Image 1 (tube, rainbow, N blue to C red):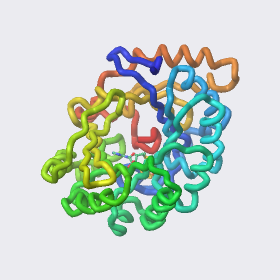
Image 2 (tube, rainbow, N blue to C red):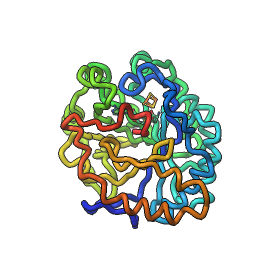
Image 3 (cartoon, rainbow, N blue to C red):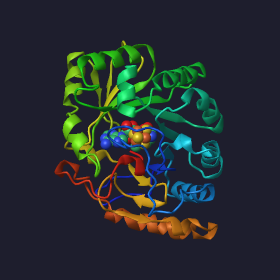
Image 4 (cartoon, protein in one colour):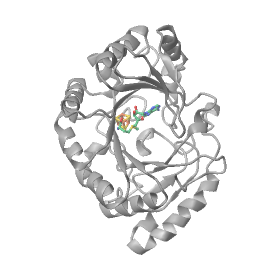
Length: 330
Ligand code: SAM
Ligand code: SF4
């Protein structure tokens, strides 16, 4: 069990590691103008040796799973090496990724060969035009082809996330189309409620809708709520014996959302972030430079746990230092 524990009794067996801020999509809620270089920040993204040291320390602290995220993690050319090193040289058991699915059909075999254990793909709509409108890219077909490749290779740990957007992808018709999809595909599909960030207030006001509408749809259509298992994370899952996949809801504004928090985050430039939001975050990069610093880093991580707050306080509109989720990985 994880040695990383906070003062509210939560444990952290799971780490989200952003490996780049760069992204090739322009999702309206995240990077509506695409990735823009921040000229005042000339620190480079964590390199392989730093990532390896970081993972070794996590592993010593009984972290068993790392999710690679971004920005878009697949823009990094050394992604296969990163996965291989994490899997073979750090002691981490599971390495998974969150991706927008760019060129998924071409890249996926290489990632699986590197030892990837699971994939979360962001697909905001199964309608090609709506997908393009939200992300700025007409790439739905290649993503769906990528899922086929995964299935042909008998890879089953596939999750799809969509951000719920009022008037865009949140109608009963949208819900039905995902139902048809997971009826025949063993894929877990989850709606994430849109979160306010420092940069997206106007978008948030226009498109935010409570995930209760999807919950009501699930209840009406006989989906059965699966009780939370310990350390399961924030998704509320629903099953239906007639469907191969599951439905899920990630509702950051719900009352008890933070109670099941089981993850810490490291940004692509080596800052430890105790929460997706808030103002807490310190750089740990100076302790990733030599192999003999790892014990010091371990002590620092343990010491930081007392600063983790009980909630993200997002319901109060407090977005902290998080301007958009591309800098921290969602
Ligand atoms: N580029 C990758 C992707 O899109 O999957 C990984 C990084 S992205 C920041 C991770 C997840 O955060 C995606 O599923 C994305 O839809 C979600 N996300 C980004 N901004 C969000 C927001 N304001 N509210 C809710 N989810 C958001
Ligand atoms: Fe890029 Fe992911 Fe943000 Fe979309 S949500 S702009 S794919 S980082």
